[in-house]
Amino acid sequence: MKKIKKILNMDITQEIHINEESQLAALIALVPMLVFSFFFSTGLVSAAETTDLSQSITGALDVKIVDGSGNEVASPNVAFASKNFAATSQTSAAVLGTASRGNVATWSLNLAATSGATSSWSNGTNNYDFNDVTALAADGGDGDSIGGQLSIDPSAGTLAGVGTTSGANVSLGAASAFNEGTVDSIDILSAAAGAQKPGVWDLTGVNISQSIPGMQATGSYTINMTLTAI
Image 1 (cartoon, rainbow, N blue to C red):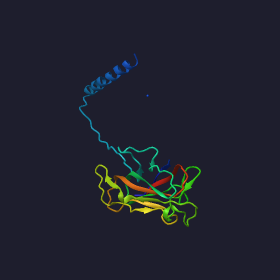
Image 2 (image 1 turned 90 degrees about the vertical axis):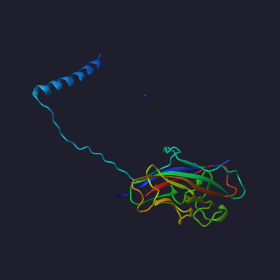
Image 3 (image 1 turned 45 degrees about the vertical axis):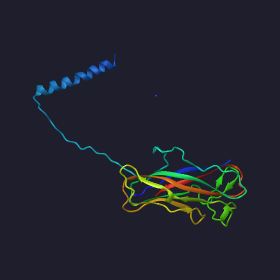
Image 4 (image 1 turned 135 degrees about the vertical axis):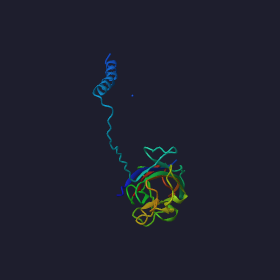
């Protein structure tokens, strides 16, 4: 079956401090009487005909961010814990959860910045990075002059098949961090040959952390990320 790519965008935010009717009924009631009268008067006892009923059910890869009841969230947003201004670097944390639907032999689910590797967290005026590997959220040798790094740990999450779906042959990704030009996307889930098809899985508890540079200006920062099932 041909694989279909499904893309879901979401924002990650960080806060730094509705007399004709009776005639019709009579007419309908009269029709069966006329039909029965016709059948008996012609001597017809019974007749039969067969027919096939058909129903097509299609499916493709899909990914959604859902609430605790399994309902799709219209405008997904993963909010990090609010942090106070600090003179030194600090780390903030959040948790991501998704629902995935697979109808192909093998597939994977990954996370990447919507605008690519040169994206950054922004409050409209100030920025900090999500893919600079330099310690203490300092600026390193990438293509910008800002520091900070976003880390994802799918292995800390919980994967569960929904209904009769089995979790066999579907694996959580390994902990990783974005590194411009080297790690531009991170695998969250992957399904090997033998994974149930079709199937639905819920993933909760994926840990996310972001290092924030010291002396970062106060404000509400956002970076848009994309979950892609391929």
